[in-house]
Image 1 (cartoon, rainbow, N blue to C red):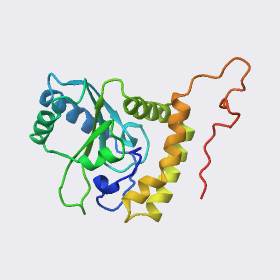
Image 2: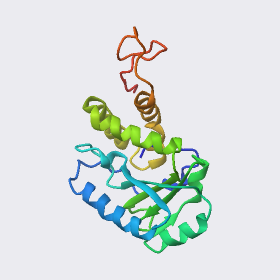
Image 3: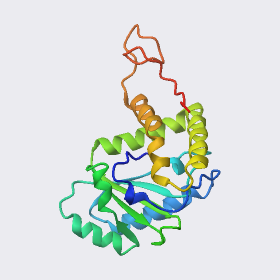
Length: 208
């Protein structure tokens, strides 16, 4: 996922595994989204499939990332209880990375085994929501950037297989650049397409 690691303990897990795209990932998301819609009835405003498993054809860690919007975090303890009832564990450490989100994990408690789902809860209209959706949509629409992302992930997975925190941290520059390009306004009249207002080209180059 495109997190911004600070305190990395919340996503410490099994060895990094980047797998070829699995057509069952959208189905797994849809099943979980239906479960969440029932469990959070009255609180859930919107839900989206995000992260690499939401991009058709993209290699990824086989963990389904789900983004959920609520009106605000008032009554959050009750939300935690409802999510615990369907198998989610709240990870308060994730707030150190980004206080606008609350992250829940689902899957084996054994840290040597891979989680099955990550649920990212944020408030309606948050910048966090906008960034994750923009990143996903950009990769769906720009296969050349998606291919560059896969190359980077495979390199980092080979280099940091036993260090998920380092793997995530070393993707950060790529993720931030894609977010910036996805969210930035269109070129102004007279501006050369494909360049930012600063004059920097928008193409991504992975620096080894």
